[in-house]
Image 1 (cartoon, helix red, strand yellow):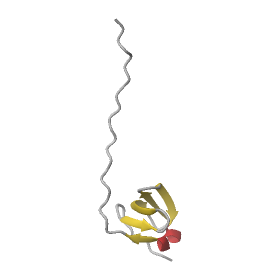
Image 2 (cartoon, rainbow, N blue to C red):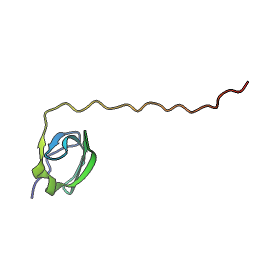
Image 3 (cartoon, one colour):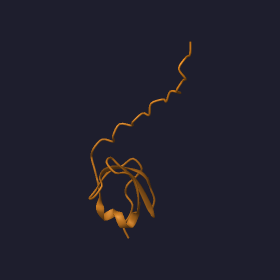
Image 4 (cartoon, rainbow, N blue to C red):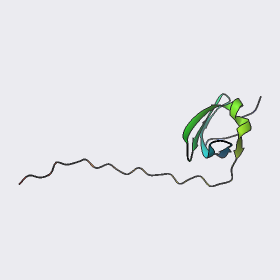
Length: 76
């Protein structure tokens, strides 16, 4: 049985999905947010052979812009 040695925030590389960040992990499940493929959930024991640690810096957090309310055009 493979042990889960990837903590939250760890940078990893998957054979198929590329570079990503561990969002959550337990002995049963691991959730990884990949740069190009979004968030994926895996059974930990099944994915451990496909993951390796990456020494890259975590991507900068993207700030979501504040939405402005649409205003009706002023009538004269």
